[in-house]
Length: 398
Ligand SMILES: *Cc1c(COP(=O)(O)O)cnc(C)c1O
Image 1 (cartoon, protein in one colour):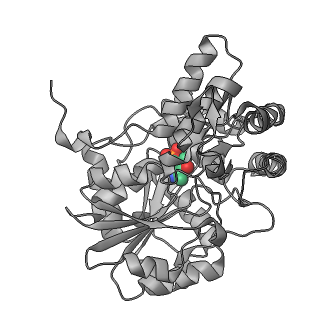
Image 2: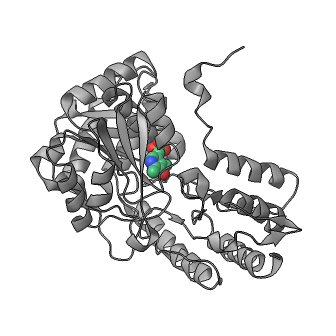
């Protein structure tokens, strides 16, 4: 049977592929330490689970409005008002099956065939594929480690054409951990001013920021930019709720309504029970996520210190999310058991085989010179894994 052409250029998520390979080796009894995790290793806080259990017991188990229950949209409205200082109506807010679904639906609502969508590279691995599925063309704007992986206005302007329709921003960034400063965001807002370019701002890591850095949103750049922006957020990363599948978007009414129509004809509503859980998360205490952030920060520092001790590795300090993105290209040309390492994928495979450590090759994010290490695993596992990585680069390589 033939698969439709629309799927022929789409690759399965590379991060999930590496995680699956690590899991297979683990099943064979190998003591694998996996730095591939794209989700908090903490459990969903109890009060959130209780809200879901209560919803279930009370029979809140039927269809809801396709765009989510009003109470949850109100909670998102209040959250956005508090965090961004912006007023949205509940008809400008939609609840989705995760932030990923919100981004994908927003692209579907914005892109016509051949429209160009700007992705800052290194990019989250799903963006280019979601853009293609929506009929758009991904245009990559490469950033440099020296610039903290943040594009300049000139970098963006060089990529704009008459066909540019959307710019995707993601700060804190997965994979680089870059947090865009207010000044940088202003510069980007200036670059798009007067150009009729919509912005999708993927703010899924807005609460996971360290080292005194602050979250800055492009919506602060004024009414014109705000009217062209779709804010995407969710509970997955902030509240350790990846499996519950609840995200949201806020933006211009026609686009949000388009997304709701799309949702009504495809997924229907996000899970009713999960919506009640997300409501408890957004309305409830933040102690659990504060504790999680503190622990992530401790691990971030330990991992960074470990990486900086390995000669040949360069790393830019990440200030958000839960990833480091060390550069390993200086090892290209070195060998393991006679086999030459030529790419981040070769390094990922060799690390898995020789050191029993799983990472995600930078190639999955458009940068073959680096690898991505998650610190969403225990401090002990990080310590042991870092020791293995050091040994691999300093002793195993020929
Ligand atoms: C995890 C992640 C998402 C998706 O989150 P869900 O709400 O679980 O769909 C979106 N963007 C980035 C950059 C992520 O890392």
